Length: 103
Image (cartoon, rainbow, N blue to C red; front, side, top):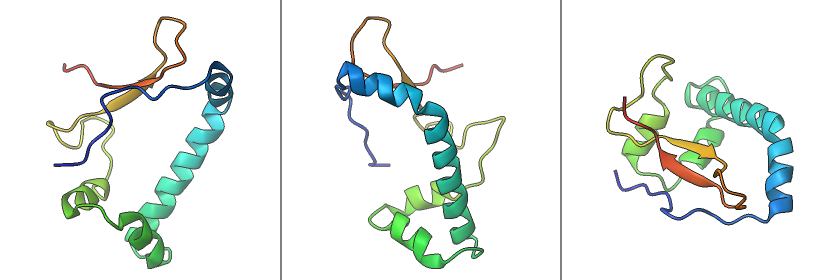
């Protein structure tokens, strides 16, 4: 799949990074609500334009992957990269997306 994430961390000012940390719980709730709205739209339980708008410009393989029901015990695809947002150990304001450790 040719859907990319930058290999370089996105630099954040320390004040902005601290503000994002305080918003973590609220942002997670927002993410879950938006994800539910998208899934219900794709299933025909909410207006179809929502899923159509969010799917615009994405490769069909990515749309199919994001519409796959989530699994709590296994990853969606063994070859897919997963990302975790983790603050580096040093006092740098950079946050990075890194591949999940293979188990």
